[in-house]
Length: 162
Image 1 (spheres, one colour):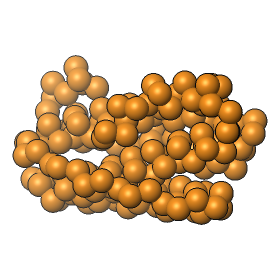
Image 2: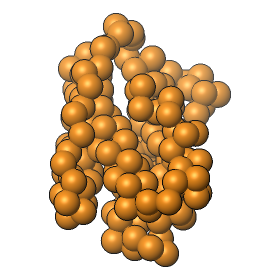
Image 3: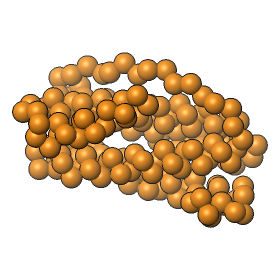
Image 4: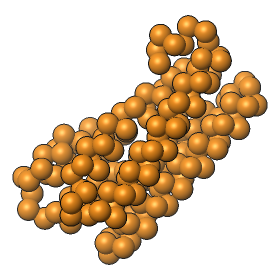
């Protein structure tokens, strides 16, 4: 998630420190493409380690949607005449099922806040891009609820974390 560490710098660029709006859109889409690809990879990894088959199925279904998000973003990047960014490999830490779910929930929370900021900044000049990000955000709301429900079923005390 090294690209996320640069989020504040990107945000400053978006609000006007850089003059090339198209470049800013590319940077947003490139970071979002990497995020969505990583989400899918992480969810698949977590699904493989789930004790309950229904959790495996649900996480794999969410991972498939995240892969679809990456595809949508790839289309937007290509439509702008840009190339897809290289997606750095991520390492996975061994945890228990509950910790995986909690990490997935937190990841979706962080991305939701970023998405809302990006949508608001891009809506006027790049409505097609903003619309795609809005669809991703809407799915994210649903995914957070699904993960929260899995947490609740796996640990009755999970409502404290959600």
